[in-house]
Amino acid sequence: MAAVQVADRSALPTVKTPETNPDARRPVARVLTAHAQTEGGGFLVHRPFPGMVSMHDTDPFLLLDQMGPVVYEPGQARGAPWHPHRGFETVTYVIDGEMVHHDSHGGGGTIAEGDTQWMTAGAGVLHDETPSDRMMREGGRMHGVQLWVNLPAHDKLVEPRYQLLTHDQVALIGSPDGGAIVRLIAGDLGEHHGPGSTYTPITYAHVSLAPGATIEMPWPETFNAIAYVLDGQAEVGPERTPLDAHQAAIFGEGDGLIIRAASTQRSDTDELEVLVLGGEPIREPIAHYGPFVMNTRQELIDAVDDFNAGKMGRIPS
Image (cartoon, rainbow, N blue to C red; front, side, top):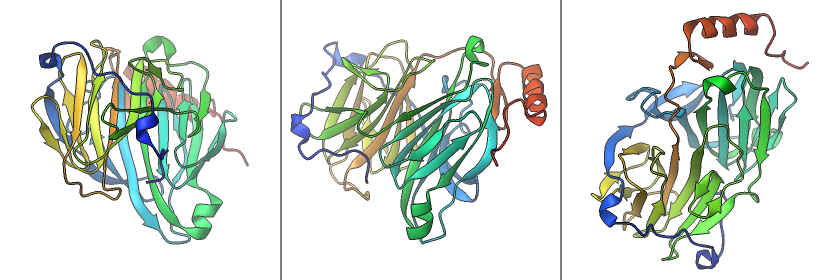
């Protein structure tokens, strides 16, 4: 696990335990088990949503894909060749390995270990995500996550934008017991702020928990809340619902989250690795066709026509 690490977690600023009634902690409303499928140039992903639930159930999040972990031999690494997007944002978080991004709007660069690429497709953009020359030459471990964040109707056609959030920009937070490291990529967690600039209010974090450790986090009452286990074994919510790798919990209402690491971990890092995310639901119609997410069928037709006409840009030579 090459995501951002610290030698002494007890030295980190801590997330404050919510001071309200413990009975107000969010219960687990539903558990999802990710299904596996092949994407892009032939790489395997685990996808907890959509599938068992619709895009409306995880609003404002549309899709979550876990890529890997996988160890490639030299010349084996896979990526996603050129393709379009419109109407939402793609957030690619690289935990191990590295990728290279190019897009038709001029964005791009290397996404290294611990980095996050935040691409606002908006009105439309073509892009690709491919293994770096080093990964192709030397091989190695690859592990990452891609999240799709919806845009509200009034922002669907904004100018495309690219943010590279490097590993040294991520806000690092601990827990009072010293057993956690929280990498806050976007949004707020109590008094702490992540570096990502978002159109839709969200919180997005990667948490590592030592065996038996617990973290309690304040959570906005207006946000939904999801925990997805990348690796390891968790117990979430006040009822201690068990979660294994590639499982997600959708929480019910409340003002705080509680996540525990099982006392014995079967994971590559000997710790629990979990994504925690939530956001303000947009509550608008969703029309979805492949790489386009709009509000109406006519807007999807327009997106296809604009793509075919080259209005989303052209693949650089």
